[in-house]
Length: 325
View 1 (cartoon, rainbow, N blue to C red):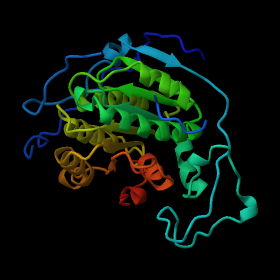
View 2: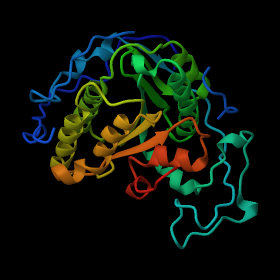
View 3: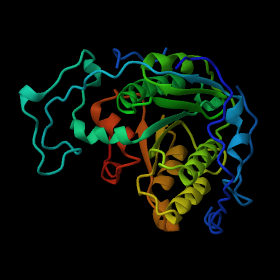
View 4: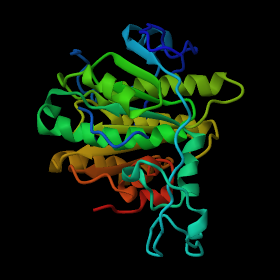
């Protein structure tokens, strides 16, 4: 499929109203290469009911520049020795025989978690959302490039139809991306500007997916959202996540139907607190499924453990509980 822009919305599923929980406001594999607009959006919606009820055909994605691609299959994955202390191994797991290990020309993407752990990603569509708000300008934007380079290169190996790339403010969208070079090209077309409408963008994408899940047979693949952001959102993603989780529970959907991983770029303490609350408190506070994880990224090397935590933490509760320093 070519890389020509298009203005086709992601779906035209019928409207579904998700009444916001009334209590929501009570407690208010090329070699590694780091990648080398503005929207006025709604303010925080904590004073009114939040819904996921917009028609997908009316979403802002209809005005986006869409890039669809379809390239060759990914290279083989290296499986280096795995020490017994590796948190991705079950207690009885053993290292594979040396003769059974495969090699790749890209040693920077060698993985210490066992390959069968990452094979879980084959069952998911991977959607990456990048915070392009004005606070990301400068060094944090370069850190986001580094993080995105490693995440996208590895995720594209397992998502057979390619990963999708969105931004919080920019209408630019990339779909079915199967190489780091494609992601780099799209990232280079965007500059940080605007606020941090995490809830609005997430609501838009969740609504589209949930409508397709309810209306389609067979059901769409589960989806794994990875959100790269530097700070606390300017709106209310918590209520969006709560209402989506309640809807999934009502549908008896798989506990891993939707995963959400927040990757914090930088170390702002207020952002850390806001993201950790969504990771640790939502499931117990609202009696819903746990589908959120958070991981801190401060420019450190994208080692195998960190990549595994980012890509699996939102869809694997055991990985969610791992702390990566």
